[in-house]
Image (tube, rainbow over all chains, first blue to last red; front, side, top):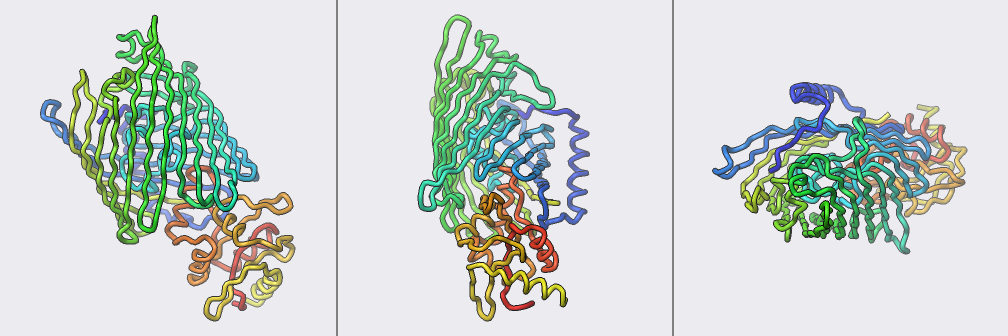
Length: 377
Length: 132
């Protein structure tokens, strides 16, 4: 697993204290559960131990405690909206989303920083850990600072709309254009609204979703993306003479459910035009996942996920991100209890790209408590 | 309670078209005495309480959830949104997380619900037909 690099504006020690204070304050105060007005505040809390079995060549086992506080604020006044999301965790503190919107019927136009619409999982769950069944998220949905290899944060314009197709079905269209991430040392670096710079190339994304019931949550769709990724102090890229990567992605996704069952999956084909000083190389790979979950009781969910990548070991682009997960098999069990609380246990077998065409294989186990505390006024 | 009953009966004077009979109770939609809302069909009602935009006279209709009675709440979940309480709450949270849509306002006191209905002629809720 790629080591978490801190993207933060405060020390780890300070983050632990602030996280502890937030959790205690939230739990000791009776939240105003009844929604009244146009301000909404959601506090997603999660935490627990994560164990990574590391191969004998690489060193001792790794155990860490991970805790997150994801603060989501929204304000609506007539057609005008603001939505912000700030994540404070043991690994990072970052303004994840901040966008201003204008709503006209079922169409919303946004300007700001948002999650790429061509990443379906992220567009559904964002950093709201409690609403996501599993603890981990698939490789192709990983955020940049968690080892993600595809752009997930865009700063620019986004338009979301729903069109009726006759009967009860609908077509959901989401399109965005803005500044994408740069390729930093070992990870992609999106625009930081709190510390912006100007070296980011453009990115465009499209998601088309067919909903058999436009008021329901089943959908199947297409995703497409394009990004111009500038190199920004990536050692491997500099050694290779790589200046930028033009990346195209095309894929499909499914989010479907039946009584007691839910399946969500995505497959993406990634084509990279690797621009060296005197020539352009091309590489491509395909990556996908499918997660199935079964509710065998009102409060219990058993889930499993398979993730696979093809041709990833030959990708020049992926050599820029060492310790990238290639394949993973996940099994988990979730228990919902009390008001908006969940306890989840997850085990996984991970295959990770290491250096010089080698792969690391290791086991992983995680236990997580998660909750959401909603306020409104 | 006299004033509350009077206001409630006045509101119920604008009964809209949907009624559900459950045992000895009938459930009706209610709006303010000054409300121009007359015909709201079941599809529009579901849209309103699932966070979709439904307009009349250029104004967005706002749904207000009456959670003062458990049986009434069960009827609402079964017949209007066709979801369990858990699924409905998750959906509300998800809409706020994804699109910043405000959650549907909830009232556990009938007096507060009546005040809210009276303050916005483009809001609707539901209650039992028989006086409380």
